[in-house]
Length: 405
Image (cartoon, rainbow, N blue to C red):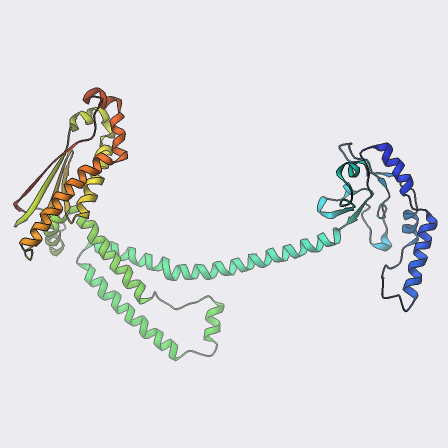
């Protein structure tokens, strides 16, 4: 192998193996194999006469690369069909085989890069039998993985149906029942308890009458315990009821708790009656208003709701942190309540007042430090209407007294 055609021809003439040398080598191998003392050293096998003639032939086979930069002269032992040796596909040059099907050996450790490119001896070996069996083993591994994944998916699907899908379907059915008739929540809980008791009794009966092959049959059919676990169904039912109560409280607010109770207890009509008799309560009332809201509405237009929600996120978050609740929001106006309970003494009422004062302080500080609201300071429309030093301002007030809930 050389990068020069002339050098390749010269070196090929020198590197040629004479027929007499091949004949002497074959005779030497036969002598070693026939000797009892040396037969165990080597096991070359026999060399067919046709192959022996090829080894002793001149390096006359040109196998240059397609790029034309590398020139190769040599011979191929499988350049012709050899049915007696199992060679059905002749390979005169290495390029007749795919890259994974051939391997090259040459001396590249004791030779520098320049001399290696000038010329070197190379031996190409056909690895098709190894590639064939490697492909067969790869297909077998792929088939095994596919079967394993299919079996695992069946098992996982059974567990998902038993642990997730069926409980979710039951939960949806309970939610629809409670939505149609809120008083049906207790009835649904009683029916669920009866079903759980019947399931436990059935399970105990099956365990008592279990045959010797029942366990093996259940494993082969991917059949687990029937019915959902008691704790899981109880937790799902509890969470459903809590979420329903949370949604109702979110829709009516804490001040409308009596309205929810009144309407949930009434079964004579499906209409929501909000006109019920109120009660007098003592509380700390806080009010916050967005300054220059009219100007902001004219400038921001459709984005004014995003502006209000960004402020409401801060106000509601701080109020909830300090044990108050947002009672009303009307455009630029926020109403917050800290309600006094019957068991609250003067000390706790004083702490409640301190929390309300601290809450408004935190609201003002959070509004002025908010990087989101700081973006409105550079709004061209707001700067034109309010001046170059415009910023988001809130005006707040606190009051303690009584109100009708």
